Image (cartoon, rainbow, N blue to C red; front, top):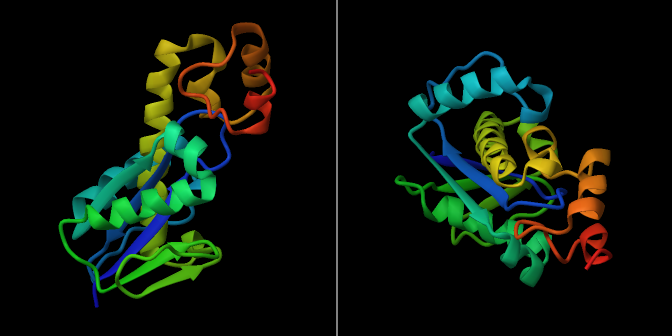
Length: 185
């Protein structure tokens, strides 16, 4: 059966989109070290991401923009990004496994698995490629907005990020609906 694993990265940050990935792995897939992306070093994630993309039957990245997050709320924006990731796969899966406690409607059977990124290889794979893609995107944003430390904090509310918000203000990539940003506006 063709199973797509789906995971998101970036629900908690104050800045940047939420990024999701959908990955369909072949039955013969074996990749040592595959686990939840948060348990891996940046270098290991980058190596695994390249290997996953090479070996997957199909993979796709999608996102929900900061504007969509502010308009819909983070949960609904995440579900939308997950739907986009699955819809964009070159191969149509027969089932979708989602990390977490809820799955959006994909039009095919889906199951949410709490802690799935540490249990299911396809969800781990999605977790890794989504994390690498979002970290790279936030590093690009760091070039445009150098005071916020996005290359290190990926938009999460670290001390440096919170202080930069106060000193330099809210940027176009900040989530205005999130309390720490909303309070400054």
